[in-house]
Image (cartoon, rainbow, N blue to C red; front, top):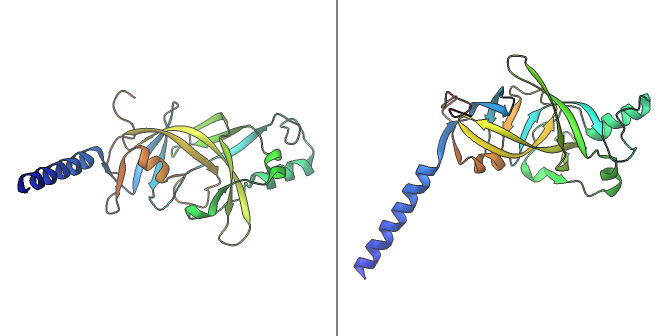
Length: 208
């Protein structure tokens, strides 16, 4: 029985050592690149945030119907698009305040793909068009709610390559344009050391 106990303890410790080996410790602030363009950004790593968010300027809306047409120039319709897309700045809410849109009428207004501009810390700009994975409704701390599109992006985060859902937001009121939440931290097997910043010098591993 004693031998069985020792074997069990050994296996448990071996499992813990393997798990520690597979976890990559990074600081709460790190370099990141948006792939494949390698757009460099400063990213805040936050295990308290459920989702990942990036500062984006939405410049074109496309839809299978005529509810939100990029070719329309009517000012009232443009105001309605801005209001529906929630382009005003917003706080990063707790995870439980983010939910998929359930309102069928609102969902019908939302485009299937979206074109947006990202800007690097050095001022370089890229324009991407991506399929909208889903639309989420976010309750604002000051009351009311906004709508954000969620797309799939490939990121290099402090030497770790990961693909995941990212919601597009106006983060102009924040210090950092990119917030890495638990969805990507988990995929990248990153654990945060709150005492460190830029623990990894490279945003991408060699050869990527």
